[in-house]
Figure (cartoon, rainbow, N blue to C red):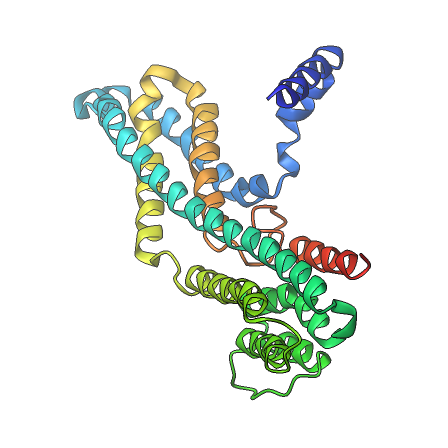
Length: 306
């Protein structure tokens, strides 16, 4: 807890000593990938807001007869509905992201445990092929989840394992590792207890694969995402007319802030809903599968050298 307080204190002191950092934080967002995706929508809504405020000023009597200003009351109610929709959308996507991160964290733990037990019971240096399978399995799972079939097949070929091109490749590699420890058990080199101690980690890894596949193959229903976006744009279209009389041309920056926050949260939710995808849009919201796979491989290499 103290470590986090120290970091916060350092950050606040840095902001006091270098005020330019505050301006950098506020005005550097135009370089962010999120802002670039929102730029077109923001420009359209700014122009639309200018038109709405100008129309309010020019046709003031007509707007009074139509009681357009009463739309503000509608927005106060509808903003509550929008907040619930956005919150549910973000929570659903974050739950998928966090579940995926949990599976990959479990993969790290089970890979280390299996490597340590195999190294002590048998020695990883005696089973080069088993060691390579264990090191490369996270990379294979990464390819598998991203539907990169050719990369998956090439990786299994480099491991020297025969397989059916239509087979479930993660299961093929796990099957080979099972056959390896089972061979040692049949030859009496390891006991049944030692076999079972390693079996639990291989079983956990298969469960991890299934959990990740559930996330990757069960997307959030498209109608729900479309409905949230439609409700959001419906809200923003009527917003300037409801508050133009109250705020005048100040409605323009208000609209920009609203669309940046609300639509930005929707874009973040869209990024997080599939945590295993590549970062095509320059965002950093997907799981860093490459770095996790590399970390597991390095861990196993260090265990071999124990």
